[in-house]
Length: 514
Image 1: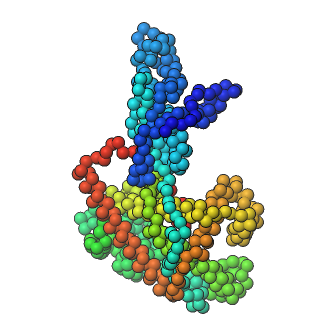
Image 2: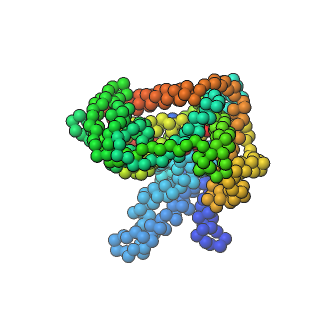
Image 3: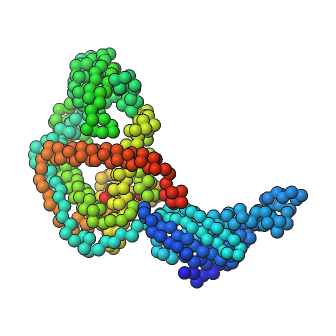
């Protein structure tokens, strides 16, 4: 179907380059859609047909550029007649012209179809001649169409946990606060659990091949029991400054957790620091924050903060459970560009954390790096699908953020930071984070409506029971990710044997979890 607008070469009223560029961006180019096809990965492939009149002005511009720069035998650069230049360079000039028109044509096509383009168009094929016109085939990734109705949201029933908030829970929170304020003093005595330890650790295979990703030099930790295998941490008890621990242990394989493999550890103790806990009294309360005069005041504040934190945790757990259900109910293709962007950002963050430890992604080895990338890819798919569903929910609920909402949120942030709301707003605007603030507030309002709509059934558990539930969930996720990574590697190996993918397939080009 041809567009009604016709092409015309426009010139800015002031003749400026900027005006000319802006005119080009808004230029209407007549075309006819010859073919179009929805493809996996939320992509669209389409072929457009253009008459010679539709491209002649742009082709003439390209030929003028060629005439000014090409060198023909017998002529100085830029002095060859235009007809001779056309005879020698018309084909490459047509290719350049087509490539320059692709972005604008893709923009016109997606606007006409109502698509939200997520990537730049990918040119698949083209042909152009004076007598037959021009055909341009391209592909572009678009935001997927999500069909969300009242029926989709009907009967949303999910389960979550409510941690029992009693005096014992508050006392444990106080003890955690006490642990965080512990002092560590050098000692010549042997290491005890919860002490600070400065150590170097070399991990290798029984054949003596070092595993760089597990080795550290002069690393200080106050959580040795969490950062080293249980057997190694237990064997370190009693070790003094200057002593070395050498032992072999059995660990789950990186590629298959169900398979055990032998790993050799050598740990050299450089220094032991004994943990000294402060007394739980009024002086401790004052050290934590000068606004507290007594331990009773601190205990009351801890209880209130623990209550607020638990309410927020319950909300987050319920919301994640709701999105788990919505991902099952809504079936649509995920844009590859958004998934890859989310995965790459996760890999970048991991790389930055590793660099702070003196390591890099490459030091992990190809096999482990491949598994990490695959795990991040699976998590990225969840993140992207949640993001797209959230956007659709905002449209469905017609979520708007009022000035009252904004002021209430600013007041909350100001109270937490001990500042004025206007100062918080000024800082957000100065750092160009105001739009992000509004977007996050819109997500929060949409999430509130979703939780109100759903039937959330809470099961009361103790903090210890919830910890066990979370650990079991984490183990299950790790096993699932390891299995998915193994299947992906098998699939890639099979594809390598089968040969390369069809070269004509278009190339691929992100919202945080609710």
